[in-house]
Length: 263
Image (cartoon, rainbow, N blue to C red; front, side, top):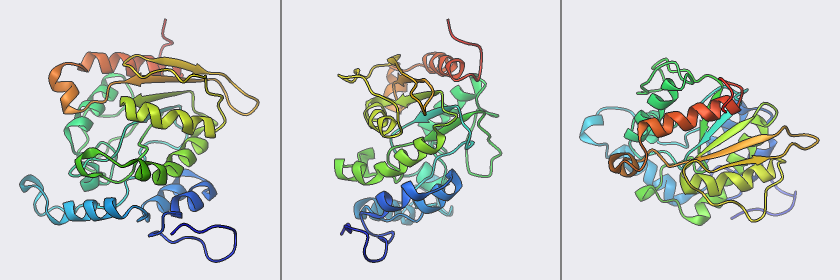
């Protein structure tokens, strides 16, 4: 049960109020990540991530699964954030790193590498030597959900982690790429909480959607771009091609000051 008021001890990792209480108190991304991986606030997600680890796919039998919330990946001074949906049960939930170890991640990291934003085109495990250049990859839900579908309540419970992450990145952040409609719908209000004014009505998602959030006294101008998610459904059908994703990431890199400015 979520606690109210200031009296009593802070909520523990198993309580729904744990993210909201602890995320905003973190003074840096390292502290945020350390708190995040302790979280057990969503019973259904905890059960699923641990059940998946106990019954791995044949290809991963014998591997030790991470089976905890998966923190964001990338430098703390990133100028570009890429926001997905949630870790995959046998991907990030296995490897402990966002988009690492599944087909969507293979597609994304290859595109980041082609765009000059990653040190290598493949991501297999946390110790594989992969580095991101000026980019942090994260998600609005940090535990693998059944059928890749977190509930609205689970999204709300996890949201403070993303809000705190965007606020900590804000001083150097210049562009955000939202992967999929869920990523788009999740990141816009979070950016509003971090101090950027949002347009009304909020623009609809689509591949190539692009809006500029104006600078304020405390926040620099921010570019927000939408991309189809690199799910197998989208990549197998050609809805999202490799060249489409590379082009969008290259444009985002330019807007973030990580490459040539786009036309």
